[in-house]
Length: 175
Ligand SMILES: Cc1cc2nc3c(=O)[nH]c(=O)nc-3n(C[C@H](O)[C@H](O)[C@H](O)COP(=O)(O)O)c2cc1C
Image 1 (cartoon, rainbow, N blue to C red):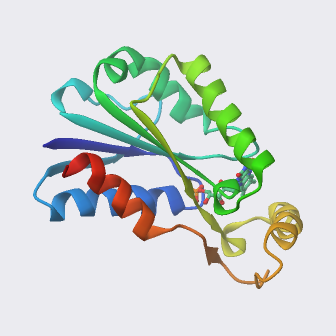
Image 2 (image 1 turned 180 degrees about the vertical axis):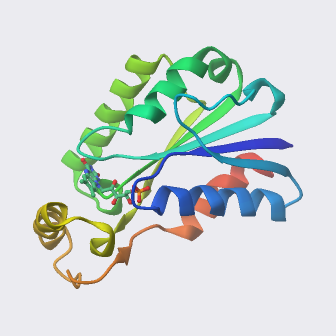
Image 3 (image 1 turned 135 degrees about the vertical axis):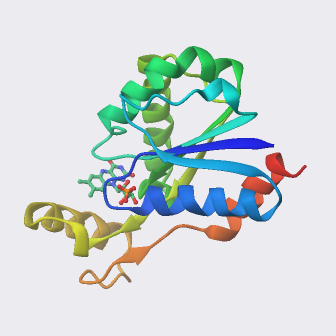
């Protein structure tokens, strides 16, 4: 299969997840193109058998350039095998309200861009104080201290469940 993996990322975790998906596909015998996407990415998506797009949630939204890219390519995406990996910290927990908000954010994105993904996978991202500015560090410390009392707030912490992600990729890539 010829797979396109596109991503947007602010602190790097969605990029790492996209690379992981690309490596997994390549290692299991598929041809892969990995690329950061933004509104001006002139990629020809119809050349691929399947598409994966990964992007993080920041304050309730996916990055604007990513949303613009999806809007531009919505018609092609809707006729393709095109899956969405939504990266967030809410997906690291089991809070029902957090999961409802993830569904809302993904639904709003669908409405705003016109893209209805073949599947949407919510994947836990990372807490990365080493990459935040002072204000963001302050806000994120407060959130993470409530959601994960065991976290060392001075250190980066990855919540991504790689095994679960592998199982999901494998289920549709190598059925
Ligand atoms: C400023 C900021 C706002 C965030 N807002 C949300 C949010 O609204 N909901 C959520 O679940 N996670 C939120 N997160 C967590 C990110 O989705 C998570 O850290 C993710 O791994 C970031 O991906 P990236 O490294 O690819 O940018 C936020 C993180 C930051 C730094």
